[in-house]
Length: 301
Image (cartoon, rainbow, N blue to C red):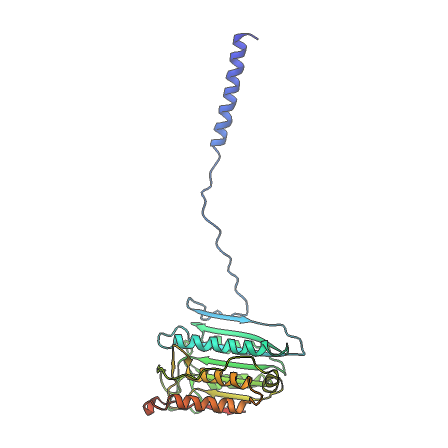
């Protein structure tokens, strides 16, 4: 090989290497834009009303065998309100924990189907639709609990309050009638709200709920074999309903406390639960000015 041939071969090799580097550097670079946007899946059965920030509508449906009863719990709490929001959060927590415990200690004979509306989701449309969508069988139980503001007018014909749901108030009587029309074996319908104008907060001595396990025999009598149908509200017409940031609404707290005690006793029954709830709330507000005293009301159907 001559010097000229060696030179040309070396030059050719260098040119090939330079061309390869040039081609590599000319590839288009795509800038990194971060991870893709998350995909949001909306359940078709979930109402769109009240879905803005600060509200939640959650449902935990269950598929239950025909041999068991389902407790359909609908919990509605005005958790966004500046005055009573903290109190209603506690109410919602107490009610959910109570009926989760009832189902959990029923030896598999009770299932819990839970629907919770909180914050801006507590519109009239959402509340009534949540009730309408309950798939209630003949042996099922419906528990409805509202915790929030309430009022009434001089023209309000019934003893029950109007619940301050968003956009439009909802008559508690409408809720009672809707639930009755579903023909459950048992229902408990509660409204912890004023039957006058607005809620007030007084820090009074609370009734401590009982601790410990429930008796299966009492669960059997009060839930599995019971046909009780009852509605109750935290105050009679013309009264406020009180609560605080420690115990929640006095009516809800007293109900949870007395039902907990009843389920822990072999003698527990529904009549004493509501009578004792009424007694406790009356006692807790007895030292207040007359306009701030509170007397719950209830009715068996």
